[in-house]
Image (cartoon, rainbow, N blue to C red; front, side, top):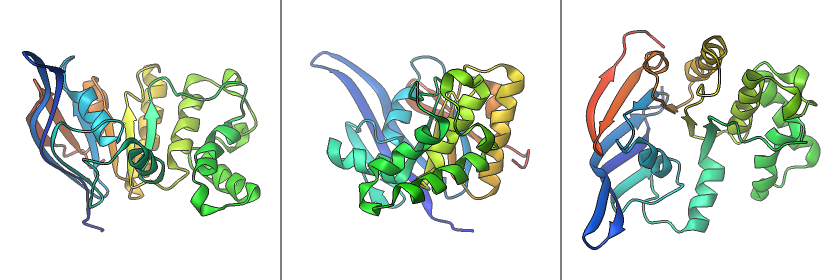
Amino acid sequence: MNNQKIIQIENLCKVYGMGDIQVKALDGVDLEIDHGEFVAIMGPSGSGKSTLMNILGCLDRPTDGHYYLAGEDVSNLNKVQLAAIRNRQIGFVFQSFNLLPRTSALRNVTLPLVYKRQDKLTPQAREEIAMAALEAVGLAERAHHEPNELSGGQKQRVAIARALVNDPVLLLADEPTGNLDTKTGNEIMGILKGLHQRGRTIVVVTHEEDIAAQTERTILLLDGKIESDKRSNNGS
């Protein structure tokens, strides 16, 4: 197994506000996640988990400390550089799916490849890669359906396929089962577990203990600090 550290965080701090009115959303967080790990991040409202997710996803920068993504220090990159890292290195899955309406599942999955202009793929090559991603989540037969023709679970499968299409080093899922019933949510977790078993590094941000219990490791945040970091013995 590749033992590369996908996430390495050192003394990470994030402060909001100015002058006397400051809030430390993250307060000296240290964290390492290896290649191929399946990790849940939990915490109550105001714990800092959304802030941490935004920094892990290169959607925001820390106030202090360092964040290394697959060995590259991304802590002080500018917005353009962070956007390039997101497109190349990170796949996102959101609670609300974030699919384009009136656009087929296949087209939704193809879009990240269109933005990855440096690869200079032909439209046919992009479509083949996108179709393979849909097949990987069991949704190839719905490739030409638009989001309003899909169930919630099917929409999330499309979102996962879209997250995978650029072969990212990190799959970051923010409450991926939050808009789904329990049965469908477990099906989505089954897909994520299958991806993990094939070597994907996955971080799930969730407030649901039963979802976190399906991962290998659960990190609990409280008041901007890591309160606990526990490994599961469920063999996910």
